[in-house]
Image (tube, rainbow, N blue to C red; front, side, top):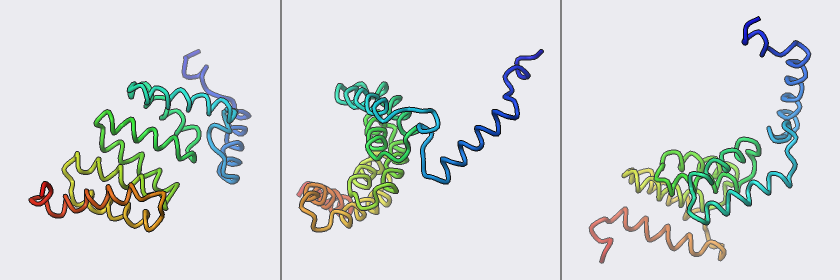
Length: 168
């Protein structure tokens, strides 16, 4: 018997898996729910990933954040961590992807477009950086908790729009 034949699940397993996936899709669950991961287990992985990031061990932290994003795709912290690791590793396009998902999950948060703008600047795409900064400014609004984001986005936007005057 070939290895491929041995690895084939039976019809009952396929039906059971299909039913679980359908249930998750209909009820808004996650793959972590399917695998039976508890919130405590996911929080422990997050804690480790966060600590690795804080220690500057970005490659190790990125792997854990990838795991977390895959199994709990709705947790905003996981996408922020993944984007931050990738940005630190100078993998700016991948960081932008993570920040984009975060932006969709938390549309009124100005941090994802601000961090994406930093990545676009690093890639030399000033047009997209400008657009991202305008989004960061929009979502910062007059909310005091985002005053620092608003200030930084405004400064960076002015620098992009008037490159000759940036140092003036």
